[in-house]
Image (tube, rainbow, N blue to C red):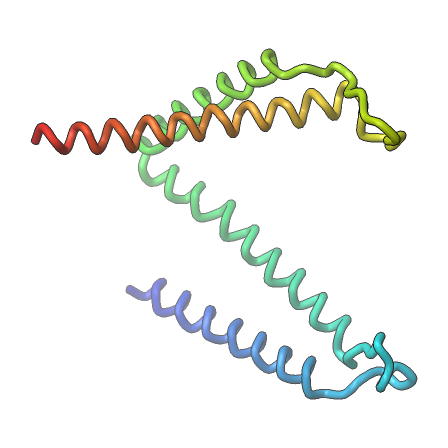
Length: 150
C-alpha cells in the first residue's frame, strides 16, 4: 500500500510538471526573431526536449527494474519467461534461415539499403511477424472452438 501511494504521487507530480511545461510551450512566447514566421520556435523548446528525455529515462529504468524485481520474487514466472525467450529465439532463428538476402531489382533506385544484410534483417522480422500473426489467429480459433465444447 505504501509503494502504491508513492507511485501515485510521483506520477501526479510528473504529470503536473509536464502540463506546466506544455502550457508554457504553447503560451510562453517565441524565440526573438522567429515570431510571426512559419518557423516560430517556442521559448522552452530545449527544456521540453530535455524533459522528454528525462521521462524516457524514468520509463526505461522502471521497464527494466520492476520486471527484474518481479522475477526475483517469483521464480516460477522466471522459468516461464525463460521458456518464452527460448521459443522466441528459435522462431527468430527459423525466420532468419527462411529470409533471403538476394538483391532486389529495383528500377531507378540506387540507395544504400538494397544490400544483402539489410534485406535479410528485414526479411527475418517480416517472417517472424507472419509467424506470430498466424499463431495469434490459431490461438483465437482454438479458444473459440474450445469454448463451444465447455
